[in-house]
Length: 151
Image (cartoon, rainbow, N blue to C red):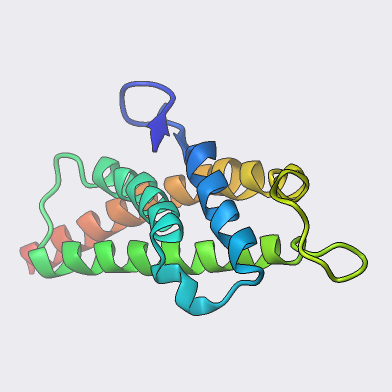
């Protein structure tokens, strides 16, 4: 995961194209996409990079705030589950491009040329919005924890 600038709100999360390429290569070698593939290393790396980008948003949102450990753990689990679901849908969409009009698996170069268009949509545009949502969700969690502390 890379961030475009130093400092809180100007950070722009991006999943590396090489990580997406490795996941796409794994998908192409398999010839289809199955949910159990989410545990395979190239795909797990993609999930982890998405998780890292979103957890950066959570950390920004919690800056200078204290929340209970249980709440922080739940936020982390939610981010990880979301990252897995996002990756599932991204690769499910990519799998629709695996085969040519005769039903044969495309060579990787051809497949990646087509599937590469998915990367900016999921791993730049959507990820930036999801990162901002993570920041705001963490801020709301911190505010809720403060309200509970006062009561």
